[in-house]
Amino acid sequence: MEDILTIHIPDEIRHKLNRTPEEMCRDIRTYAALMLFSLGKLSSGAAALMAGIPHVMFLDLCTEYNIPISQITPEELRQA
Image (cartoon, rainbow, N blue to C red; front, side, top):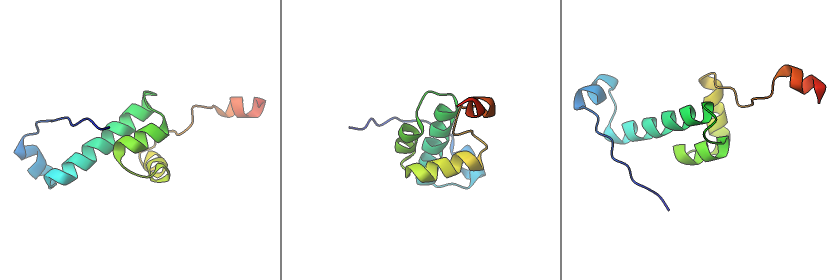
């Protein structure tokens, strides 16, 4: 099941970004998924599903945007 949400974005913004409506939709889904994952609201798998991309690609995007994919600290790893 899937919900459809409508977001109103001024044409001026889309034109400044040089994006088609379809590209804007994909970008917003991806950026929202990245943000929700970085805030700990979604798992990486759920965020990848939201973004509509494979899990490994989502993890690559996290690296590209400097979003940690693990909350485990180096100290916790040493203690394990």
